[in-house]
Figure 1 (cartoon, rainbow over the protein chains, first blue to last red):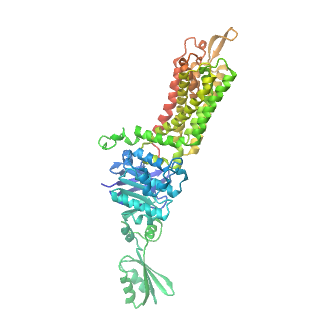
Figure 2 (figure 1 turned 30 degrees about the vertical axis):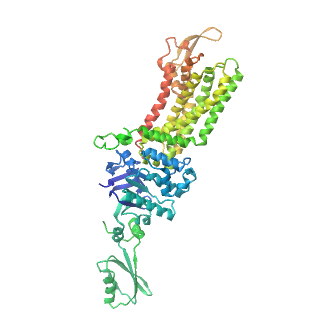
Figure 3 (figure 1 turned 135 degrees about the vertical axis):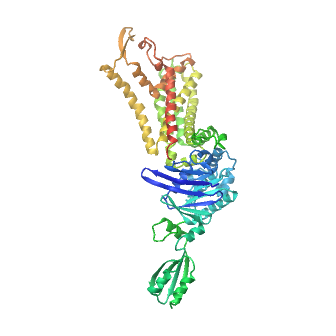
Amino acid sequence: MPAITVDELTKRFGQTVALEALSFQVEDGEVFGFLGPNGAGKSTTINVLLDFVRPTSGSANVLGMDAQRQSREIRRRTGVLPEGVELYDRLTARQHLEFVIDSKDAADDPEALLERVGLADAIDRKAGGYSKGMAQRLMLAMALVGEPDLLILDEPSTGLDPNGAREMREIVREENERGATVFFSSHIMEQVETVCDRVGILRDGQMVAVDSVEGLRSSVDGGTTLQVTVDRIDDDALQAVRSLPDVTDATVESQAPPTVVVTVDGSKTAVLSVLEDRGIEIRDFETTEASLDDVFQSYTTDTETEVHAQ
Amino acid sequence: MSAETGAGTDATDTGSSPASSIDTESVRAVAKKDFQDAVRSWLFWGLSAFFFTLMAALAGFLSWANPDNLTTISFIALVSQVGKLIIPLIALLLGWKAIAGEREAGSIKILLSLPHSRKDVLLGKLLGRTAVLSLSLLIGFLIAMVAVVFAVSEFSFPAYIAFLAMTIVYGLAYMSIAVSLSSLTRSTTMAGAAMFGVFVLFYIVWNSIRTALGLLMQRGYIEGVSYTTTNFAGQQIETTRLPDWALFIDMIDPGNAYQNTVTLFSSLSSDRIGTSFNEAAFPDGLPFFLQDWFSLLILLFWIVVPLAVALYRFDRVDI
């Protein structure tokens, strides 16, 4: 049974369409990265999953339950780290956690939880004096209360330094090993690539790609860029390179020395041999793997790069 | 619908929405958290000190001005006039950000990502804030009691406590108005405007209504009720009062309702204060809706109705 099923979900706020017939599934026990630029509809999706907003049409199902009608039971089994939220200034970390433990009827120890997120020394300090990173750590600890079956983390790295972000990912991994499904939203690819089993990319309220990190990498043309420095180049040779099945693009980048930039999906040697067959001398070549950031960019911005539909 | 029935209700769950049910444990948890939070504010301690000072100062002043026949009930009757004006301001001040403030700060998402329904949150907030107001009244009243005991000629503890209880009910009515309006607005700016609207309505508009009705009667647009009474010089005079319905409109104001209810517990003391209406004006007896016990119902109305509207409405909005 999938942990989350979103089916044809549409949400409009007046004239603005936040989500348009969004459908995706998060499998039980996986870490799912929910990626998209700001304003793509990530928070709206999470808000629907938690029944903060009601869908215009379509449905959402969490842990096998209807997100609207059985929301209370869903939230009993879900740990949430909401985004853009202020803590209660006058309450300490201990009091925040006691409230969550009380609310979920859990038996956690506030100290142990804060130990895990590295905030144990601030346990009796009021949250009003916390830095953004400390607040984020406390909210992560609050999400962990009661060993939830599902963790919904909305931009959990906000305000964390690289070290804090790494610790947070470590906790995500631990929770996943315990058996929790993790739904992790972010607008930064590199934060999800190391922990997520699968990544869904949201753009303008629609899922434009759902795949494993590897799958996404190879789904984008420009998976590998080959840069070949040659002694000379002509249109004929360029056409021959372009006609190769694995090549999606080939351009001449500079003339002194002539450099051909080839976007290739499969064999790089085929490109080199086509050039050599035409008597062109290859002086140097270099391959660049597309970074995941490029992958993300290609899905979320209007560039010439074409995307293979999944 | 309680926590225990949450699991495995898929089969029985037909149409009704357990997500919008009320769970007493949740209400308690939210109220406790809200109380913990608010009780640490300067506002709470300021209020406690304020109530104490107010009560003690009034007791001191009244005993100085009226040293011989200041009874508990006459003290209460005077303090209730001050309370009538001050309690609403304090309740609005304590309650206006209850929900709108959390929505603005986003922390409402902390509350609602836990297994609490929106109704739980609303009720918990109302109870938490009312507890804060009640505790500050309790502290203020009890400390000031020392001064009151010395000031009045015959102290009645039951009447004093009943007065405190009634003041808490009055505070609850205004807190219900404040928290309910706070839940109907998206921002604290709107909530603040709504509180100001309530203030204008009950402090200015409602008082003007009675004056306006009186004027309309004088001009002959409303038919008044004539009756004979004895004036202070012992002469029989013919006079006119507003019709029953017009007097009822005046009674709907929570403040007037609160003042009328104060007479209810005059039986707790050896002393009595008159009811709000001159008996001679009602030769056929006071209609039930103008009697003092009905004012208690009016106060309950002001607790229940805003809350009912808010419970209905807050369940249906996007956060």
